[in-house]
Amino acid sequence: EVQLVESGGGLVQAGGSLRLSCAASGLTFDDYAIGWFRQAPGKEREGVSCTSNNDGSIWYGESAKGRFTISSDNAKNTVYLQMNSLKPEDTDVYYCAAVHWVVAGLDPNDYNYWGQGTQVTVSS
Image (cartoon, rainbow, N blue to C red; front, top):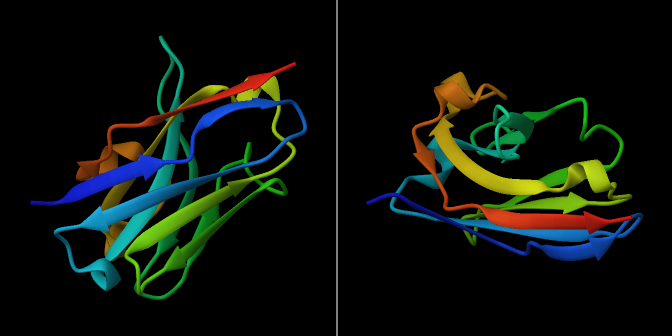
């Protein structure tokens, strides 16, 4: 059974930082890409960043460029999302998801497996 478990969310002031973690199990980590997505109530899920564990390719959504960094520890089957210079508009539930690396990218409709989400709240 594939499981993705996010952690690291919380409350932070604007300008602060958080690091999210996504621990994966039940899959061959090198065959998958792990993506980070976020969603606010009533809004569509937005692609934040993705990394392919097969070849190291990385994607960033417009909201993440220059502020967020995705990284992967293949030995721990864990992907991290370092979020710096956080803004109140970054407040969302953040999800990690997994898809075979061949179709890696930022379209949430491509992803097969999802974590339960972690809340990130940025106060002004």
